Image (tube, rainbow, N blue to C red):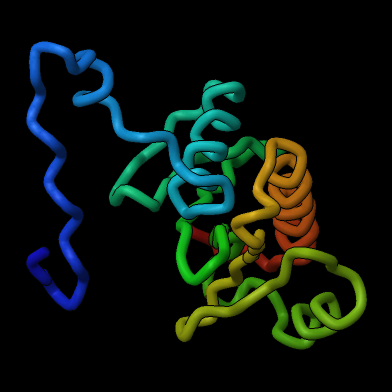
Length: 162
C-alpha cells in the first residue's frame, strides 16, 4: 500500500470477473457499526427523513440547515476522533454577553455547550460518541442545539445592520 499525506491508501478492489455480481464491485461494503462512515450514513438517513438540503464538503463532513423560529440554524457536522461533532453559529460577534454564556454552560445546558469564536461570535456545539449515533440520539442532540440557539438568540443584542 502506498502512503499519501501520512495515511495508508486503501487496497485496490479486486477486478470484476464474469462470476462477480455488479453490485459487489460498484457498491462499497457496508460500514462497520460505530465507524465514522456508519455515523455519517445514519446522519444522512436522518436528514433525508427531514427533507433537509445537505452539503457534503468531504466524505465525513456534512452541512445542513434546520429551522428555528424565523431563521435557520446552519449546522456543520463531522466524524473525527471517535465523535460526531456538530456545531452552528447562533449570534454575531458581541451579541451575547460572555458571562451569560459561562453561566449557561455551567448550570443549564446538557449534552450541548456554548462557545465563542476569536471574533466573539456565539456558537453552539454538540458531540456524540460514534457508537452512540442513532436516529434517537441525533434527534435529541439537534433538538438541544436548537433550544440552546433559541435561548442565545433571545438574550442577544442584535446589531443594527440597516
